[in-house]
Amino acid sequence: MTTETEASTAEKPWPVRTVARKIGDWIHRLGAVWVEGQVTQISARPNTQTAFLTLRDPSADVSMSVTCPNWLVREMEPPLREGASVVVHAKPSFFFGRGTISLRADQIRAVGIGELLARVERLRKLLAAEGLFSPQRKRPVPFLPKGVGLITGRASAAERDVLVNAQTRWPHVRFKVLNTAVQGSQAVPQVMRALRILDADPEIDVIVIARGGGSVEDLLPFSDEALCRAVSAAGTPVVSAIGHEPDTPLLDHVADLRCSTPTDAGKRIVPDLREETERVRQMRDRGRRALHGWVDTQTRLLHQIRSRPSLADPLGPIQRRQDDVDVHRERARRAMLTLLAKDQAELTSARARLTALGPAATLARGYAVVQFTDAEGNLQVLRSVSEVEAGARLRVRVGDGAIKAVAEGEPG
Image (cartoon, rainbow, N blue to C red; front, side, top):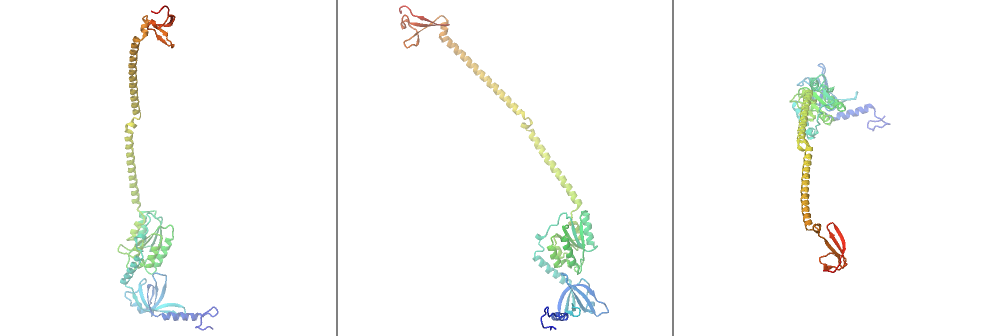
């Protein structure tokens, strides 16, 4: 047999009782501790000495059993109820026979509203310092989402307000509703689970988390750190519609869009069909007027262009230029004829003067011009008989021609 002081091996394992005893020793050495959690179950029968509680961590799926004297529960003011946040002073106990751990409490203190609000304020400052409230990280909600995810209580007024108002504004909107607890210890894990499901759905474009009004304690799950971080990390825009206008849980600051009430959320996640129809009609009218105005402007401009002389009578300028050409051509022709007539008259006058002064007229009156050939063989006009000798050949020119002659006799 293996002693308890020896290390366990595959060949020398410890028996279950040894392991249980060692675990019990470790747990008992822990001593009394203060534990905070949310009460999820109370069993305090009047005729029993011991009350049994279940204490749960609101930010994780972890719970522990708590036992305490029955009078400790009965004497609490206000009475202890499920969902209440408490601080317990207890000593961990290990039940050897069943191998379970529980807390044996000797004090139970309800966490006051002031303390709860102080914790929420501290968490708000922490998340704000990390940038989870920054407007730059908030995503715009789609104008007309193809699918809307709704996380709310089952058959709640918040569910009805969101659905009725959204469908009244846009009848064809499609919802995927996941009902969860919206207060108490199960609210945070159920809402986070629903958020993961809707965020993974490709048909969902926006997620609405809605709850009606309630006390500060009822709205505490929507100021839970784990839920706020899950909303911040979601890939789908999240709309917060928690409580009434004065209610501002931390979820309102982390969400991409904060709505004052579930009714307001139903109005803001989808457009109003009547308003959009009227806007389309107005845009159509504006477009029609703008188009008509543009056409009228272009028509007037076209009329102005067409009314210009060059386009109103495109052949007129050509015809006028042709008339000008004809006029100038006729003027040039007349000027040329006048010049020619003048020159002709001058030529005729010169010819007449030349004729009157020339020998032809004299010859025509019976005179003759006698020419002889000089020593060089050139014809010369005979002006004196001494210029030729007998037998010289002469040329006699008369009015209608010339004849040849021979000089006879003596000169003189």
